[in-house]
Figure 1 (cartoon, rainbow, N blue to C red):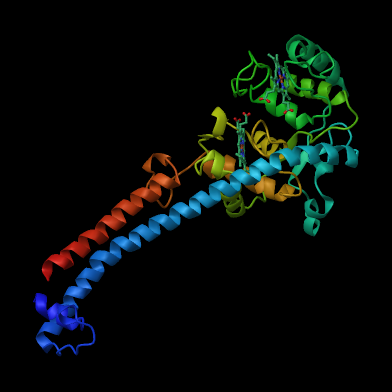
Figure 2: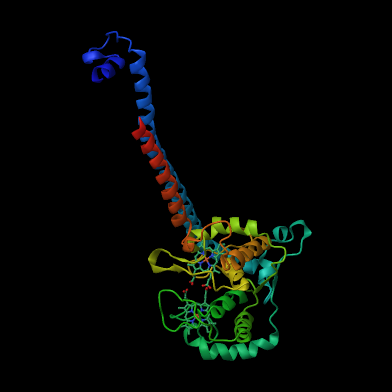
Length: 336
Ligand code: HEC
Ligand code: HEC
């Protein structure tokens, strides 16, 4: 057997140039089968390794490109938002509509699914009082900022509504990240505070979005979410830790308005997605996907697996599938 092998490779006793004797048909047949089995034994695990490596590379690529995008766009987007806010001369309370690029927002003449909440002038006076009692100690009486808290003048009603409406503000004490908690104010009081803050400047950022989800495209929302949000918030929206102790919070408690506000204003370490990135229609698609399948998963068409996310679910599939293939390979190997 040993000798046959050597001869077949054409260099008996290591002497090059010698003619190998032709192996008998029986020997050749058994060698072919052995080679098939060896191929299976080596090839299948190799395939698995390549597959795992490929999937690791592709997910790392997605994560790093999302990270890079967030790093780059969050800072520059903030600057450009301030710029476009002043350039467009958006009036008080009308930022959301005005900031949207007319070409994309009015695409095909369809009405925008997002409108801006109008804040009555009568809200300003009670808002000023609430602000002085709850916010000025940190943000200053005219909201111009202090060493403890940033300037709020020029921020849109959407930003104020998001931070106060999700309970992030008022901040109890200086912590690493203002966390969502049960809001201290009623919905109307939040709007009054927003009306006061936006009354301090003629030019403000986006107003409070009212999202009409009737014509929303869930499939589009799904693909935009997977591409642009899942890297930080996970595919199930349950949130995840980012670098430096920051957390991409869970999307499950957010209202439609708050999701749209987060997208357009980029709270904390989240990048801001302006009208240049998403039209109002696309924002509505994402909002519909988040407030629909993300917040109310029915696990249709798959095993729930506790909703732990794509990595874990993929890994289970890998384990079961590859485990099965290995068994087949070893069974084939044992038979011969
Ligand atoms: C104890 C101090 C404190 C109090 C009180 C407080 N804030 Fe803040 N606020 C902060 C700090 C600090 C930040 C920056 C937090 C961050 O970026 O994570 C902040 C951020 C904000 C932001 C986001 C600013 C931006 O550029 O994105 C808004 C809006 C805001 N506060 C509104 C309010 C309002 C309205 C109140 C009153 C209801 C209030 N805050 C009360 C300290 C405070
Ligand atoms: C680079 C990471 C990152 C990406 C990408 C990202 N977010 Fe966020 N998001 C965050 C962080 C961090 C916070 C928490 C901000 C804070 O509390 O200071 C957050 C907060 C939110 C909130 C507020 C939830 C709450 O606590 O009430 C919503 C809603 C949200 N994001 C939606 C989205 C959507 C939709 C997308 C995709 C279009 C997206 N995010 C993309 C990091 C990210």
